[in-house]
Length: 253
Image (cartoon, rainbow, N blue to C red; front, side, top):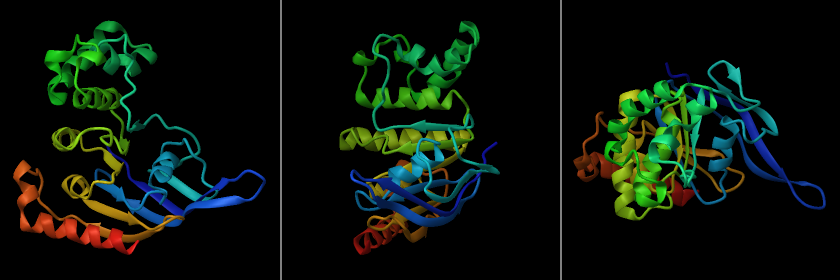
């Protein structure tokens, strides 16, 4: 079952050489409803990745707090899965074994972890590539394998830090729809950083726009488009209107 995310007066400052600090983020107070998909957009350096890393327990808050459900985040939590921009697959392991890695690290036996992978492979569109090595598949397939490695842990919260940024435009669009269909099946609470406005509107229930550093929320745009969302939705006038609203908010940032 999904849990919500929230912050209260959260700020992050980075120490600089020679003393002093550099304000990077906040103060920010917001909440994400359990099971909702929210995208973060904004100028480079606005603190989007920093905010995601705080929820992942990889970055300490300087002031205020971040919460996963009723738990204040002070370290990485087992109910939170994170996907980075690079797939970071182990090149000597097959796609199957890369996806199964978290279960292996938990001490789960080979038969059970392979059963879990086999259940997940069709959802990822990778059933024909389970025995391939990462070098033998496309960048989009590698990113789907990286997503599978997160999803096999059945996280209640899914954090995504620009996961498709290294892909070409056509592959990125295809994998974005793949992510949408996978999320619609499992419906974790999701928070994703992206620089792609169309991607943000396609995936989200809400789009949060951050200001220039130190990042603050300057727009909270609801995306009240029906789900499930077909590929053709990107041509819908309401979809285009939402992308325009997000673009205007970013331009004001």
